[in-house]
Length: 244
Image 1 (cartoon, helix red, strand yellow):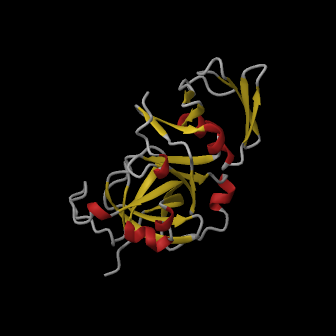
Image 2 (tube, helix red, strand yellow):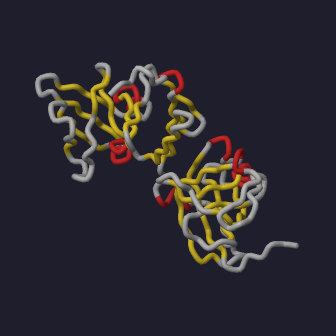
Image 3 (cartoon, rainbow, N blue to C red):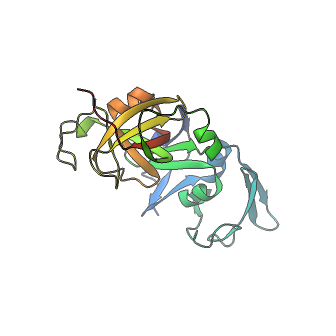
């Protein structure tokens, strides 16, 4: 695989608002993205030990230990059998696939190929997600779920949404894959504890691992926009009425 044309200067990892850059580039091959193992894992606090005699690498991440046999580069010890994407040696550097990261690190990962950026959001436990979040007693909440939300605007402003409405990036709307159009959601950004109510008028997100695409205006309401994406609590409202 030719990696000479890949630009390491633009590759970055964004953990909340903190930006990390690397000497080696990220490498995309088909549907998998690979990252330089040692420098990449170190920013997530993982420990790496090389056993020259056994030709193996041990990774300690989030209090779990993983063994990689460097002679069997498609073999990860104590990982699911479904994880068959191998590690790679590129320009004498060991690269690991994103699928490995998703299995070993307690983060949501989202790769943006246009900006050559990887967004990472730590996954809180369920108790943390719902602790001290404001309730919505004046509304009938029929369903509650949580996950990673992103936002969109820019080139989509003024275009027709899947529902037929014209998208207003400054409005309070959202895209969801399955909820009926005109469903109202109360969205709370975990980090800021701020909430807003949005109307579903579009379909998305179209990137795996995300549950909701907010309009730019909605993302600004709850402080999500500067982050790019983040963990949210979503409440589906049954009897919400728009004020005249």
